[in-house]
Image (cartoon, rainbow, N blue to C red; front, side, top):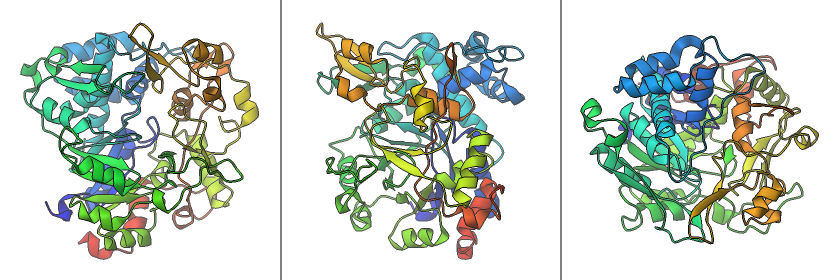
Length: 488
C-alpha cells in the first residue's frame, strides 16, 4: 500500500471526549475538502459513561437519538435509551446516575451500553464526508475492551489506535470480530499468570449476526514510545495478528506517556527525566517496513517536513486540536488555556504520581482544577467510576480490583501499599468534568483535570490576541500552508 493511501495528518485521541465526534468529523471533513487525507480520531475512553450522562442531560441536539436510530439492532438501542434517557434533562445540581463498574464478569446491560456508545460516537464522526475515522483506547483500561471494539466496528471504524501499554492482543480481536466469531482478551492481573483471566465475548450474543453479518476489519495502529516496542509488536510471534502501523509518540505529548527507562531520575519539579534511550529512532522504524507517524510537539509545518524527510507517513497532533472550537473541552477551560498559551504563561507539568495507571501524565496548571492543590485537597477521595482500577488475584484465587486513588483505608484493606496512594488523583472524574460532565457529590462538584502537550507555540500563528479562537479547519490550513504541493 502506498503512502498516499494513509493519512498525512492524524488528529490525536485525547482525554475522555475531548476528541469527540464533532472534532473528529471536522478534521476528516476539512481534509476531504482540502484534498488531503486527514484522519479524525474519537476518544473511546469511558465513552459508555459519556453517552449515559449525555442521555441524562436530555441528549442535547438529539445527536445520540440519530445514531441509535442507525444502530442495526433497534431493540438493543431502545433498551439502552430507555435505561438512561431523561426527558428534558436531569434537574440541575442533581447527581448523574452511575453505571455499574465494568468488572471481570461483564453485565449484559453494561455491555449493551458500551457497544451502543462506541457505535454512536464513530457513526456520528463518519457522517457527511469521505475521510477516515479512527478510535483511540488505552491498553491500561482492559475490562470494557471487547464491547468497545465491537461497537466501533459495527459503525465501520477505519482504524483502532491504542497505547498506554503493550496492545499485542488487539489485532486478533479485530480478526475474530471481522469474521463475527468469539474473541478473548487476557487481563493483566497482579499475582496471576499472563493467560489466567480471559474475558470473552461472542458478538452474536450481543447483536445477532443477521443484523450485521461479517464486519470490515479496521487497521490497527499501535502507539509506541520507542522503536524497541515497535519491533516487539512487529514480531508475529509476539502478537495475535498484524499491526498495520505505529504512532511513535514522544514524552512531550499530552496525556499518558511511557515512563523513562531510568525511573530514578527527576528534575527539580519532580518530573521524570527522559534520555536518548527514551526516543524513537526513525531509521529503525523505517526498517520495520510499516507506516509510522511521529507525535509529540509536531504541530508546526516545519515539523511535518522533517517527519516526511525521516520516512514517516506523516504526523499525529493533539494539543492544537484540543484548543480548537470543535473539541470537547469545556469552553471556559479552552478560553483560559488559549489565553495563557498566548501570553506564554501556560505551564504543563509531567506528573509522575497523579495517574492511577502509574504512567506519567502531563497536567496543565490551572486554578480551580485538580492541579490546584488547595482545591484538590478539599475533595473527598472516592472511586465511583473505576476505569483505572488495577486487577489483582485474591488469596482465594479470584479476581478483584483496587485503585490507588480510592480512599486510602480501602486500598490498604485490598492489599495495596500506602505509598502507592500518595499524590494520586481521580482521573476518571477529573477528565469527565473537563468536558462538562462533572459528577455532583454531597461535598461538591468534581474538579476538572486538563492534560495538554508541552509545546503550544502554534497558538501565535492561529490567533491574533489572547481572546482569539480558531477551528479545526484553521489548524489544518496552518499545518499544511507551507506544503502546497501536498494539496494537489
